[in-house]
Amino acid sequence: MLKTEPVIVDYQAITPYGKDINICWQGLLNNKTSITNIERFDTSNFTSSKAATIKDLIFRNRKSIVCQMLEKLKKSVNQVIPEDADLMLASLNGEINFLEEEVLTGNINTKQSCLGQLLEKTSALFEIKGKGMVVSAACASSSIAIARAASIIRSGEKDCILIVACDCVSEFIMSGFSSLMALDKQSARPFDKKREGINIGEAAAYTLLMSRERAEKENRNISAKIIGWGMSCDANHMTGPSIDGEGLYLSIERALDIGGITKEDIKSICAHGTGTVYNDAMELKAFKKMFRKKICPAYSIKGGIGHTMGAAGIMDLLIALETIKNNVLPPTVGVEEIEEQAQGWIKKEKIELLNDIVLSTNSGFGGINSALIIGA
Amino acid sequence: MIFVAGISWITNNKLGTACKKISGTYENRRDLYSQFKEKGIIQNNIKNFGRFDHVSKNTCLVISLTLYDADISYLKDNMQSVGILSTNEEDCLNSNIKYFKDYVDCGRKLSRGNLFIYTLPSTPIAEAAINFGCQGPVAYFTFKEDQTNQLLEQGRMMIERKETTDLLLVNSSEDEAICFYLRKKNISSENGNISLEKIQKSLKNTPGLSEIINNISQKG
Image (cartoon, rainbow over all chains, first blue to last red):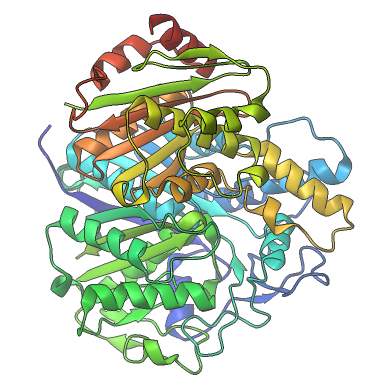
């Protein structure tokens, strides 16, 4: 096969805002947060009780939270997903509530919470007959899955790949981030002077990638193309990002190289913007090192939707697609007093601009970084 | 062409490498770290090794042995473009159980951050990346079947597409581990680097980790 261009032909998300990506987009655009108090489990011993949760999910009683989310997602599929598609599933912890219940009942004897099991279930749910693969790379999981899929399509080895990502808010995750003192007591405030940390969020989302040739042959609606991708590791610290942003800078540099474009072509940035002091500072350093004197408008969606962990990259991509479609960047929800280093980059209100090429970045535990470049 | 510059494996009582043809037995996994230090296989101390979970320990040990097999000195400054990909069949299941059980046993009030960090499948290779200074792509993949062969295939594609120049590919469980060092160029001629294609052909129809280790250790 000849080398081709990977294009996005469909996407959808189930988020705490509602059962459609457009509801999520409108929420962010209107500066509304979906972060509320957790009702699912007792949070009185944690450093925060806030998270962005999907309200009508059954918790406990041997019900898989992420499968409930995926079932809702499947019902919201816009277009036919070809059964010959390959599947890439991105997640950090998958059906972790099964493990919680096993430990709480003292009956630990299954591998039900393993990601391979979720891969089988997701393949069956979406009726995928192609190959399946799980990608887990901390909070860059779904952006790395998208990068792998784009790479495979560009090389011509496959012409259709479905990427599905999901993670849920659980006591397991909340207790961990609480112990690391990484949670904000209020709603997350990325790039704010007084930011204190993250809020966990949950989401399930998919995007269908095809070669341009196949998409055109099937008369698919092409939303955007994946231009470039880059991955790197800080090789520095397990929970703290590098001080100088060098790892993320490397990812962006590699994405530009693969895309064959220059930094001047980038019109906006969907930042990881978790709301922790160190992550946001690191990202700004990487952006400033890359763009030098140019100020590139940026935003984070985590003050609205929370940190959706393994789904963070795909949610960033989906919102970036909306920014391209509408030529508008959403405000960074939650920010009140923009920190000095972010002045000019981050806005409290939406921005209208000709937005044809977007950089989206993610970083996670272990110093794992990713950068995606998408274009109209 | 992509070359395999080093291969090594560790089981419950054996270890070996393919290029330098090292093979040996050992009695206690806890002693392996100090044995590797004595023999110069581990050149720098692995920071916090004592608190690693089992898969992270195995991952770092098998990577040390593979770099030794490939004659690569892992001084941090020389490793910028090396990535690490890993796979296994159970993610980090036992570390997840250990973390959450400890939290529940302690009254569900406060958990241990030093256990929580091992509840990600990518943590073992992140620990390795930090220790060996690998700044290339780092990700954990798992597949419906045939984990090691599919991981080799992902590595091949990433190098061919210039997403990285060198990759360490690791299949590591709590009991055993195997690691391959892939690179675009055949730099070290002394070790008789093997083509990836040849390795992939020889491992075809060998799905399990134990079978792959047997296959490679028997062929030397």
